[in-house]
Amino acid sequence: MTRELFGPETVVRPGKPLVVAIDGPSGSGKSSVSKEVARRLKLAYLDTGAMYRALTWYCLKTGVDLNDGAVVEQAAEDLPLEISTSPNHEYVAVGGVDITEDIREPRISSSVSAIATTMGARNELIRRQRELIDQHHHRMVVEGRDITTVVAPNAEIRMLLTASEEARLRRRGIQLGGTQSKEELAAQVIQRDAKDSTVVNFTRAADGVVTLDSSDLDFEQTVDTALEIVAKVIYGD
Ligand SMILES: Nc1ncnc2c1ncn2[C@@H]1O[C@H](COP(=O)(O)OP(=O)(O)OP(=O)(O)O)[C@@H](O)[C@H]1O
Ligand SMILES: Nc1ccn([C@H]2C[C@H](O)[C@@H](COP(=O)(O)O)O2)c(=O)n1
Image (tube, rainbow, N blue to C red; front, side, top):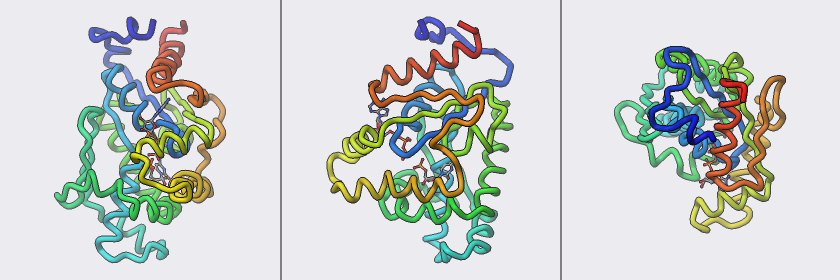
């Protein structure tokens, strides 16, 4: 059904805004599912987590004290960031240096929450996220932690993608090729979420936000369910 609705010839709401906002905890599948949803809907794609990671890389590179809010905020304003908005091409650069791979390193994952909980830095990244949405004429899948509530609360589609803690730990373990201990995985998934959720709510759906629980769904089923949610809102079927 959704495959026919969003087949290769279909352009959904041509010329009109179509922002699909997707939030959720770590390992719930936001990035992988959002990219595929963007491909199927022929929309641009923005990984806002990559922006927080890029700022973390920049602060570590330039010796910024991550606990000094004013300096982190200034770094956010200065950040010479380039980020791909294609779901088919992952690319993040700072000052012309390709950091696409570097921002996924454990040293970034373990420091990023210090940046993400600095409100001045958040405000600057949120401003840039809204600017990117504008540049794409509001036709974009945007994923993160505060997209449905803060960055794009008026998005046409607002979804909270969740999965049980057990499923999220299992998925992240497989994604990292079984290289991480139980404790390391918990630090990257559970403890990071606990810190991040002190400043944003991504565990409970806000009013008007549809919850998609993927705990018992495989990747394809999750993408299809997300597209069904889009179809229901757009076409009412
Ligand atoms: N429904 C699903 N069933 C099984 N595996 C899935 C499902 N959804 C995503 N995955 C896999 O789980 C892993 C984690 O997904 P992904 O990186 O997209 O999560 P995320 O929510 O973006 O995490 P983070 O916020 O930490 O970046 C990936 O390897 C992805 O392919
Ligand atoms: N809109 C967002 C996006 C991300 N974050 C924070 C939370 C994470 O710890 C970090 C990296 O995100 P990930 O790549 O794991 O999705 O950035 C946020 O606070 N708000």
